[in-house]
Amino acid sequence: MSRSKLRLSVFASSLILAACGSTGLMVGPHYQRPTLDTPSSLGIFFAQNEGADKVVVDLLAWWKSFQDPILNNLLDEAAANNQDVVLAAGRVEEARANVAGTHSNRFPVVDATGSAAKTRTSENAKKLIAGANPIAKDFQVGLNASYEIDFWGKLARADEAARARLLAQQASRALVQSSLYSTLAQNYFALRAYDAQVALSESALKTRQENLRLQQKRFAAGSVGELDLHLAESEVAATEINLTQAQQALANTESAMAVLLGRSPTAIVHPDIVRGSSMDTLYQQLRLQLSSATDLPSDLLNRRPDIIAAEQGLIAANADVGQAKAQYFPSVRLTTGIGDESRVLQDLFNPASLLWNLGVNLLQPVFRAGAVGAVVSGAEARKTQALAQYVQTVQGAFRDVHDALTNANANAQIVAASNRRVIALKDSLHLADLRYKNGYSSYLDVLSAQRDLLQAESSLIDSKRSYLAAVVSAYKSVGGGWDKTSNIK
Image 1 (tube, rainbow, N blue to C red):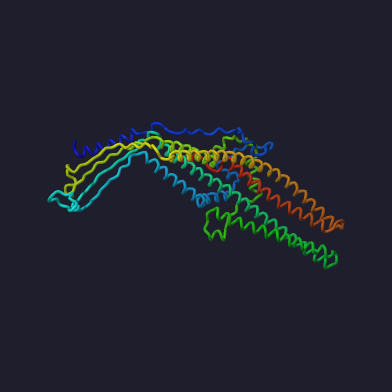
Image 2: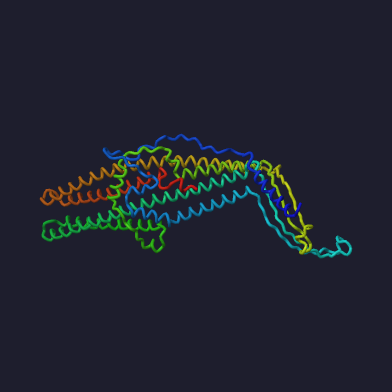
């Protein structure tokens, strides 16, 4: 056989062995999704409005229900720049690299080798024949290949575990994205709510200041006593406190949104958040879009990224058990090599310098002092933990849905009741003011009515914000905000 043909035959044999060395027996349990007692339906999403046309809500792009281009732009900015998203993307790339590295173990390893050595043997050691040169040179070049036959599925299980962990990281990235969308939207609603609170406090302060000036004139004219004057002064101070608190909350919300948007430290210190629709417009638009009842199937929760991540973690832990149990069985490694060796560099590629080898190595653990059993026990313990985490995640998902739907419906009723209360208190304030001007009641009754109305109007703003936030939580709880088919790759 010629030299070139021999080289080809040696390495062709390694490739054939790789092709024939596919997984035989898969040691360890095959994954089966745990059976859990889950309801078929999640319940009604929103209260039914009589005579309303049914509107289909896009759970993958729920923010479009608010019809606010500014909110859409802010979400796009956050998705592109938020550091939590960047961090999650980096973890996905790390997991993808780990998959590539693990999968490579299922193929032959081929290395090129080369060496050059010069040695001198002691002449007094009597190891040399008479007249032999004590100085020797050795030159080698060649190729070595090795391949482990995956008889028991150890490498296939490692591949399975690595791929599951990649899917888990991709789902975790989707969870970060979904959480970012919901958190930013809720902060945006808080921002618009504090804008409304500032406007309400400024309007109330202007009214209180006008009342104070009027009372000062009346006091100077002797029409009212000192008590009415001090009550008016007190109301101005109280309203100034409310305004300052609303401005403080507004500033804190702006800086929080700047962080979520991934802006620079300078932009965080001096936040400039663009506003879109007002709180009332956002609320009315959402009520218009979600005017019909929606019965949500429980299968929606299968798209929640945290459930997907937890299940993929369980799949990986299950594969780890099989990988650990495969260590009980013998491993077979095939090796081959071909090259040239010569003491004279000029003769290195002479046909007489050719060398090659073929070999089979078998390793069967006999006594490891319980080391293999400990690895198996550890893998089974991690599987138990992964199962518990999966069950907890599913339980938490159903609780999230229950609480979110409950809060959304409750806040809708609170907003309706708050609206009625504001209307009633406006009428009360009008009547109290008439009675005071006609001398039938004290100024204290007017102030009490003003306080109640201001508190009711402020509560109405908070109720609308809470309703919008609860709706976003409901969207998130059913896995809204991301597309499983486009994110899990």
